[in-house]
Length: 358
Image 1 (spheres, rainbow, N blue to C red):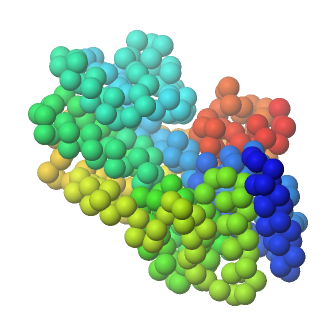
Image 2: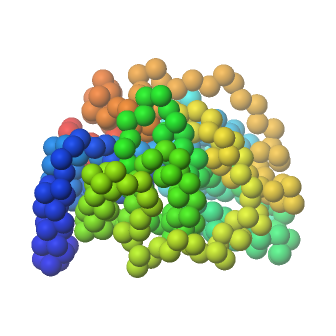
């Protein structure tokens, strides 16, 4: 951070302290924001009345146990190259993870984009190449592009395991929960750069909850918090944009059109939370030949999370990572019991690294 940015951030935080008269719980949706908040120490610099709640905004953390087990089942099958972003290899399933599957002989490879998986399919026509399609709305345009490219070039040995999730239904699920403690949201700037923030306006109105779109630098986050607290103190419930250099209300309409062409909303399981209606994206009928769930026999046993892990409560914002009896003892980044300890964007991992707990 530059000296000017540090000074501006201090001024914004001073204004937050000046105007705060009541206790407020503000949830940042994005795990990247959680990571940045702790890295910059913003959670330690706010007035004691302001509590930042770390939400389910890490796609690695919310990918369901069912999806992990399907991934493991596909990866173990002969003639398959299973591809994924790196963090997903360490997410625990019921009894194993993708690193373990690779150690036992499965051909599991880390890729940096779904197009890398398409290229693998082109260069390995005798193999079935599957890409683990995880993430929020930010990753979906590139996944749609890979499917359209494979269709155009008749690459029939490429498919995806659909696991993408959507932010607005998750916000509604949190706000409608009887144990909800959230007074306002900081919305994720990179998601809104794709999708805009017009979808959030109905949520803010229905639940009387301010929503402020913000970015990932200290000053961005401080401004987002200030705008949120102003709304709360003034009893306003609007959607505001603290990230106008990248985000517009309408978002990237070309990307949205591509998403609608290839995908449609489906019910989706969120790890530790349960099924949220219309909170995921599944392939439309015209693209079902790219759906690995349809292409492979995937029997699933009765799946159970570790009884020691409270990840679901952490992801819903009703518990802190340090409330977990296994935090930093039985559950660490090198030996995670739950997904929020795996990814650098997970609330448990961020708390472990930045709060000096070891």
